[in-house]
Image (cartoon, rainbow over the protein chains, first blue to last red):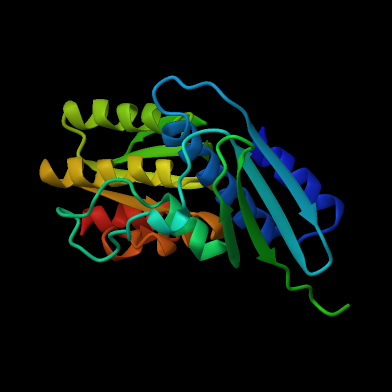
Length: 126
Length: 112
């Protein structure tokens, strides 16, 4: 549902398909982490997602009222070890960083922690 | 997500369609595990019908790689779309598992 929402908004302003897919991935990863960790232990709360498409970029604001987690705190992923030693999991934030151009985070569990993702849009000359 | 199994001469093909995400990755992991548990350890994931994969989906694939290889087999990927292939590459998965453009190529690789 959330991915459909991102896609729908992006389609309205003709964001290229590749960028739409990357935005859907980033929003999915962030929200999955919020459910698993931000609202861990049966905490109940909202996640608000706002998508603001502009000519040169798409800005996504994700607000939650769970435990704050700054993206910089995410441990570096294991991308190089042998399959036997390769760690299962821990790739979510890595993928977000790979497909998103700017990430900003403001922790405020009272009024809402706000994560802002900015995806630059390259449009082909018509 | 839909999961369909097809026995081939040299491998088991698991055709997945739809999204592999936090809501269903565990189902996929368990479905593959059930096959490995009964001796099907040479497995090909036909991802031609997969439109989206998240890191949770990758987790299921990595577990399948580890389990099948531990049992003396392998878990190989076939026909991933551009966006799915990109996620596999960004995650460093292409350095530890074998990917093929078609299911037939993947099947042939097990016959070698």
